[in-house]
Picture 1 (tube, rainbow, N blue to C red):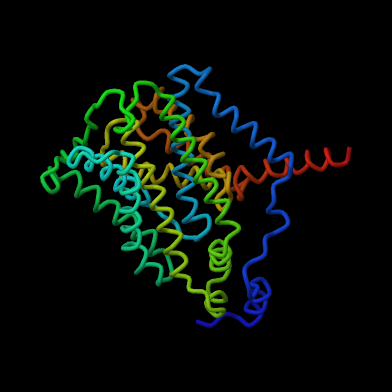
Picture 2: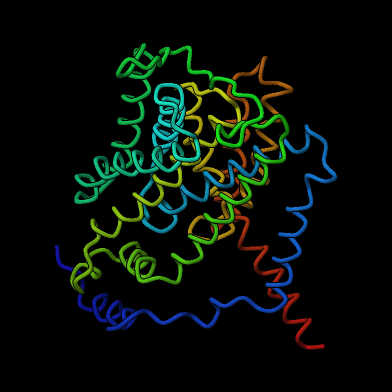
Length: 354
């Protein structure tokens, strides 16, 4: 199938011969830098004033923000829907725990190893499907996720290391141990997830301004035109998927260490994939801070509905998600980040006019 000549000319005009130029709007204003610095200082100071319950809740919200940001690499920039993205979290989580229990490997090393294993799995999933058109990638991700979940739930051991099937794995307690990534208080976990989220946001910001991000936007906008100009869609989409899977795998490892337990249903099941997707879409996919905004709204809402009515109405949080998603699609198709950006831009113009 050949792209229309007009579209080719338009895309050629948008794709410069050398490195992509940075958009003038891509910079951050001094006021924006100051706001980010203040938010960062407030985040670092939170454990000094928050009680254990509030800190636990903040860690959960930041965990979902991190996972939604990782998912955003695939749908927001690659333009492919991943319905089974939680399988990468499962690989990372189980790998971190199994390496610790079976080989005595510190979780500090288990986290990146789990991320690399998740990235390797993403290549297996993405390599054949990115060469096809249509919904094949979405179908493949959910098929792989279900196969992995069912296999884990029916497996008692791997290489002699207990997996415990559907019962899940409990992380052996090592007391207060930096090497074992186990702490009696919540503050160290809070600072770790803040660091992971900051790294994910920085990676997204860098992606938007990189050649990879430039090519991904061109592929998402017009795949035929991008191919005609020498861009390989499958290659660049696969790179973005591997980065996303690596980040998600590390997130799964953090989940295992924080909750000290991994379970196939929770860490590989479709619920976590839906959580990541909806938080990113409702917040604003294809943006740096959209997934964070979506997580700040939806993660506490999910915990409230699960805690108050979850016993009587199973899956109630998914119903709430669905209602919010329909409202967002109807009234905020670009996500919650769009009106927030408009308000901030208006305030910046007023401040500059003074």
